Amino acid sequence: MRSNQLHTFISAMFLFATISMSAQGVEKTLVQSFNLQGNKSVELDVKLPVEVQTWDSDILRVQMNIEMKNGSEGLLKSLVTARRYNLEYKVENGNFIIYAPSIDREVKIGGQPIQENITLVVFLPEDVALDTKEEGDGEQATSSMR
Image (cartoon, rainbow, N blue to C red; front, side, top):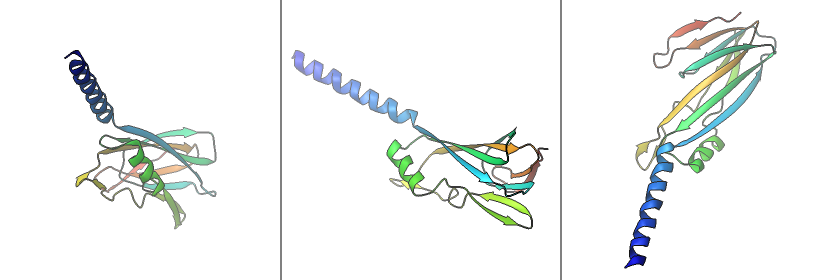
């Protein structure tokens, strides 16, 4: 009888620990740097919350913070490997444009979309102007940092 109660208690604790770990989700921070090649105007064409900090460097650095509420470490690692969170750039009419080609695609696990919260921190050279898109509406908003 005692053994059965102990087994039930251990099973309940294991279940609680599993639920607690999955409720916490997983987090990862990715960093990508860009050589602006002398460009003084940058457009950040992503619909994500952005915090801008200036710094004394010629390199623009983007720190992407990813929090996945209903996924595992393995799933997040697979999405990173599949380049879901990669940022790319192009230069058009003298503007250095940074964009995320795969981030708007919906990813489903077991028929349910993954719940992820992605934020960016941009470390911007002091003499560069940055234009960002507001989250959600796609309209242009200017965050000119000089």
